[in-house]
Length: 248
Ligand code: SAH
Image 1 (cartoon, helix red, strand yellow):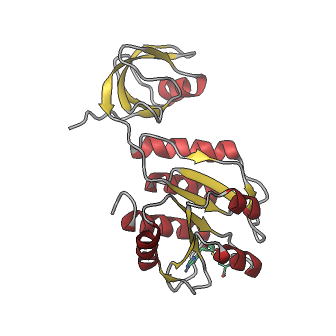
Image 2: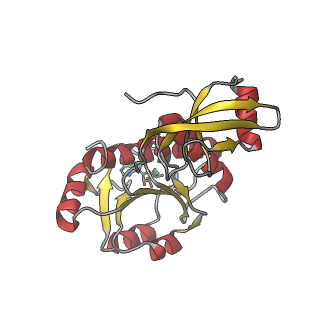
Image 3: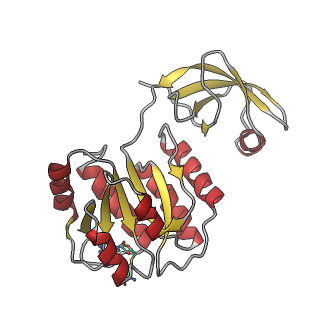
């Protein structure tokens, strides 16, 4: 059994036995004022490289909390190479989508601007903060990368050929998602993937034709009902994870 610590924090610093770490202002505020930790409290830390470490609170002031690293609790692991590309939606739903996608195990959040995208900008810092908070909460050992928004055209042009696109098409003309994923893996082998979800207004006909023409596009349906974008993202990630990913 691994030791459990109630509080998990994502930090930048390297994690090595015996090292002392002084936390930054925000994490100090969180621990000292919000969580009211005491000297001697054991926390878990991860940085995306060195696994999960247990650390003991050595000193607390309003300015800084300092910790000493005790031992590695879990070795580093990474979720499968699955990205989520999505057209930005309104604030609360976007927060929700970023948090849930992180919990479900995507490793990259990529906002893409499509023709019918309504939200005109994405606060990248907010996207990252959601990814960090959800990673701390769900026990994963890295935080998804978050890229700056780009146009659908630029995103598709920059996508490596070997990354397969699970194109979630609300047109309902796709095949059963599970069998399409299994067939794609049989044809192309184990590959990195990106799930592509459109905006509340859906994809335009021109976009749909363009995406479907790509040799790495696998079109899927998520059932007979039109899902909101945040629901579609969760459904698609769950399907992918349970068919080809780390729940399979
Ligand atoms: N306004 C559009 C719906 C967009 S839903 C319409 O009424 O047709 C937002 C996104 O969620 C879609 O672009 C698609 O990527 C995904 N989505 C929703 N329901 C889906 C379904 N049943 N199958 C596949 N993708 C779906």
